[in-house]
Every structure is written in structure tokens, then in C-alpha cells.
Image (cartoon, rainbow, N blue to C red; front, side, top):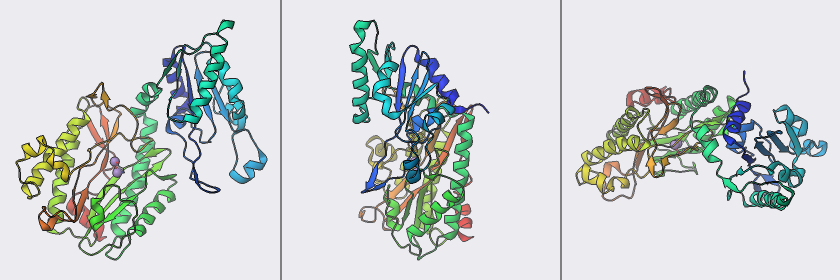
Length: 430
Ligand code: GLY
Ligand code: MN
Ligand code: MN
């Protein structure tokens, strides 16, 4: 198999011209005192290297050495505490033409920047690292009188790398599909296990254990397990409530597998049967989701996908007595946002809210085959909403699937998780 990281670097190199690119790894974050947060590599860095160690820097340049890595050197004492390091030799084995210990960055980086006209570097993201890059630029500038030239422009690397990341290769789709399979199994298990009297954290623990059991590195984001009124809190995270008979449970959870994220939401009745009011809201959200999926194809935009959901949801709000004004007016004045306050889609990939442009000079970009997005309409009626019909208060519904744009439409990657009322009631009863 060709090395996907080498192939991606070659594509970047082919677009660089006589520019160079400098990309640091993600920093380590201290959790408290001597304890670090779990380390997760920067997605761009991993996309181009497949290397997951901190304190690393990738440099790509037009002239040899074209691929340079700075890494932590081997260190038997530190490795006893923190685990093995690839070291300089390991970095070369990854495909670097040259590799250096990270301690040599200040001495080597100016040489690597020499004779490039532009520098692709993400200025402003990591001020500490900005200083190191700017110091290196200052050194090269000082050598101008020796006949060297230096990067006179700093360019946002997203213009290259995020464009590439927004179209998924077969290799990436394979990882995404596996993330979907594992996450689907976790959602099904949660449906089967949930009972009145369960705590949200018990279901969270079940989801996490299934992710890990299959080798997923971690959840792609903190799982949201919201029962009863917590289902109306979009980013509910405490997951500490005891569930009652007659409530719905909203689970928004997906794993990260091989650095690729699933992002799936299902809402189902804690006791296995939707109440009439829950079902009425649910059917509206499901119809909205279907309308958005039907609107997803090359050439359409995320605005079109969103508008399809807004139309169905707003019609539903009017029909169910949540809004008094006609749907057209509610859409024009955006009063529907009281019950549907978020967008319908975001890009999905290595990051759960993946990179990639949404707009081109303010205009929504047309979808292309190979892009992956979520479709996640919802309706959220707060428990204290005195204007809403009483039967709907305290109910939150979201249905979220992950969708690949194909040549002639789209494919729902997460369709293994039940979502019709009948299929959900069957899955919760099993
Ligand atoms: N789970 C985060 C989101 O749906 O955007
Ligand atoms: Mn989600
Ligand atoms: Mn999402």
C-alpha cells in the first residue's frame, strides 16, 4: 500500500512552488500539577506525518531536503517514564529526508527558510511558537546581504492543507466507516440497556467502553447523554441525572478511530415507548432530517441543506402550536430559532467540527463528492417555556447522521443506527 502520509506531503510539495511550510505538533496541556491531559496530535500534523509525538515540527520545502522533521531525541531515562520515542532515526524511517532533535530548531530553521519566497505558517495560533518562527525569519533576513533571500510573505496553510482535508480519500473513508460501525454498536447497546432509574453516566460508561473495546482511541468529543429536560441542553456534559419513566434520552456520541470522528445523535424513550407528544415532535425532526438528506448532492450548499430542515421544522412548530405566526413569517423573522437554534450541518473528518471552507468570499460553497458532513436537525422545548403547549415542555429531540457526498447524491454513513419510531422502539425493547 502506498503511504498515505507521503502521498499527501507530495501533494502539498507540488503546490508549494518555491515556498516552504512549517507545521508544529500540538502542545501538551497540563491538567493539574504533574498530570497532563491525554495527548492528541494536531490533525494537520498527523494528516501529513502519521506521527503522534509532541514537541515535533514538520518543514516542507521545494529544495532538498524537502521533508524535514524535528523530534524529541531518544532518551532512555525519559522513555522509562513516558514511553518510547521514535527519535531522529525513527523520524527518518517515517520518510523525512533529514531529521533533527527539537533542541536544534533555532539553529536549523533559519537555514531551512533561506531562499524561499513565501512561508506557509499558521500565525497567531500558538504565540510561543510564533516567536520561534519569527526569530528564525529575523536571522534569515539578516543574511540578505550575503545574497540569500527570505520569505517575504506569510501565507495561511489552511489554503492548502484544509482544502485537501475537506475531500476524503478512500483510505480516510475506510477509517470513517470503521468509526461509524463502532459508534453504531455503542448507540444500539445504549438503546438496549437504558431503563428508568439508570443514570446518564452509566450509559456514558457503556458508550466509552464499546469505543475502547474496538480500539477507538477516544470519543471524538465528550459524549452527551441528556435525559428528560437535559435533552434540551445542546451541549449537556455532566451526564449525572437519574432517568425517569416517560422521558426521552438524547445521546450525541461518536468515537474517534484512527484519527477520524463519528458524530451521531439519537433520541429515544427511556421506557421503550414514545409518548404521543414525544412522538409528534420526533416525527417532525425525522421528516426534517430526511428533507435535508434529500437536499444533499454535489452543487447544493450547506445553506440549502439547512433550509430544507428549517422549512420542515418550522411547519411542524406551527402545526403543533409552538408558533402562532405562519411558517413563512417565522422563517423570515427567524422566530423558529426559539426551538431550533443551531445549524444543521458541519464538516466531519479528523476533527468532529472538521476544517474546510464553508464560504467563498461570503458565498456558501457548493458541495463536492468526497466531502463528509453531519445532518442534525432538532427541536428543543425548554421545561420553563410557559408559551409552549404543556405537553411539549421539557422535550428535546435531535437526530444526527454523518453523510458522504457522492457523485450523484449522498450516502448516509451512520445508517446502521435505527431512527424510525418503529425501529427505535424495537431496539429499546430488546
Ligand atoms: N457533537 C457535536 C455536534 O454535534 O456538533
Ligand atoms: Mn453531535
Ligand atoms: Mn455534529
